[in-house]
Image 1 (cartoon, rainbow, N blue to C red):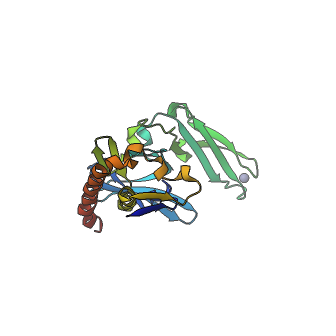
Image 2 (cartoon, rainbow, N blue to C red):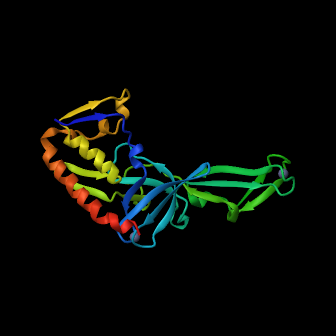
Length: 233
Ligand SMILES: [Zn+2]
Ligand SMILES: [Zn+2]
């Protein structure tokens, strides 16, 4: 008898070290990776097969959504007309002590003024900034299917009778497999509602579907193992 003990796997921890998605350009494997640079974290997506790469911002995890991951992109603002955040953060060259700081959201990109006047937070001198000094960010209110432009479909994804089985990466697949295979599932996790397994749909957890789901998992394993050598280049 095989026993699975849920020690408290959260959905967030499954995102590490990388998320496998379909490249929007060539549909092959792209990887989303978090990079820690000093204090700031950047998220990058790059294709393992073509030249597609992008810097991403603000991961928004859908509560339980196999299919897609949502990001606010700093890039490709030209194609965006929705809610934007404007930030100005510049050192004052006159007093060399203070900063010009500005942060505001506009519900439409067209409402952003061409020029913004900001006062130095130290010497109070006013200065005008044109849009070349703005940092623009998309602001999205994540809704499923809201804007497919910056959603990446997961790569390890397979349709079964009841729905879709998707995993973020091969490690996630392994965890799911040992959960499905178990004859006995235990939890050693006080905050069970926050566990990844507690949020899995009932049809995945149902022992009646176990055979079919294991078959699908084996298919995903094959997909992952055939792609693996290519990513090491
Ligand atoms: Zn590609
Ligand atoms: Zn100043």
